[in-house]
Length: 102
Image 1 (cartoon, one colour):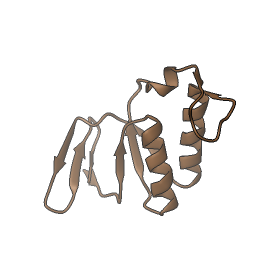
Image 2 (image 1 turned 60 degrees about the vertical axis):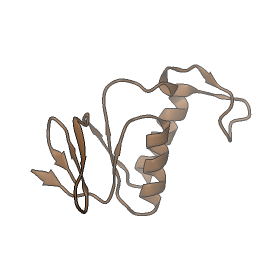
Image 3 (image 1 turned 180 degrees about the vertical axis):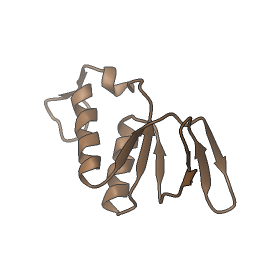
Image 4 (image 1 turned 30 degrees about the vertical axis):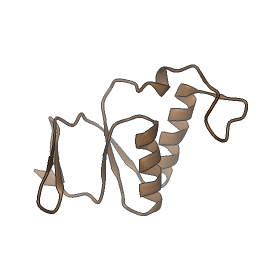
């Protein structure tokens, strides 16, 4: 069974959350596929070079805030790992252990 989406984002790092935020604000209803493993920023203590935080922020807090903000605007998060990614004629096909995303 395949589900068609305007946008599917693969990954769970800060760039995935940022992409999800902007896509959700553009009403693209993004789905974010991410696994159990934490991203590098989630393992980082103090982040001192991220815009908007002149005193720094802890990596896990920054990632959690970004995800929460993306969800606020409608991004959906699914705990699944992309097993394959294939370009088709007019869409992409992403297969996980549970389902296929188009």
